[in-house]
Amino acid sequence: MPETNKTKGTAWEELRKPFPKEVISKMPRGGVMLDYVGHAAITDRLNAAVGPENWSLEPLSFNEDGTPVITTRKEMAVMWAKLTILGATKVCVGTAPVSKFEVEKELIGDALRNGAMRFGVALDLWSKSELESHITPPTDEHPSEPSRQVDDEPITKLSLDLVRQAMRASGVTGPEAVKFTDFIIGKPAPTTENDAQELLKALETKND
Image 1 (cartoon, rainbow, N blue to C red):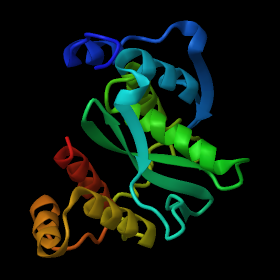
Image 2 (tube, rainbow, N blue to C red):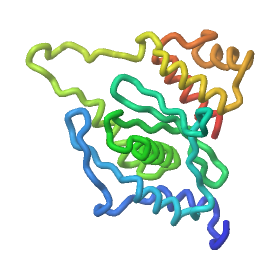
Image 3 (cartoon, rainbow, N blue to C red):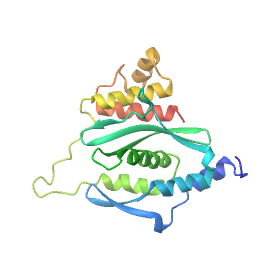
């Protein structure tokens, strides 16, 4: 690495270091306040750990005019991307309300946070957030009613498109895509939202 003699092992350790309290912010989610680190602090951590020339964030796919492909799901904008650090690549995703001012910047920042987490950046905060966001406060009306599961809902066009984009980015196409899909979810094509999630996770692992 230019300007430093750090080994990859040392770089990964630096990426995983806890953030100081002064850069940790709060945001509401699922009825609780969660800790998170902003994209500026994430960028600073990446630059300090590996150097600005040794990492990059790129959209998974582009429109004909060269702009990133951004899809919408109800009121949310979605952009799939890939974060590469020292030659290792992780698939990531950025989401933001479509009404958000400068939503493109929001998507880039969210994708960066999501991708960096997969390399261990602020992973302790993400782990806590994921646990807390699954907590469903009990209600008086139906105290014993289980929360509705959406994983087995029919796959949406958005999720199907995202799976196809991720497959193309991973080089899984044609007959190989059918074999890959059947191997992962036990059927030649995804039919539920859960299928889509399993395939996206498997494609991420394939890119490791």
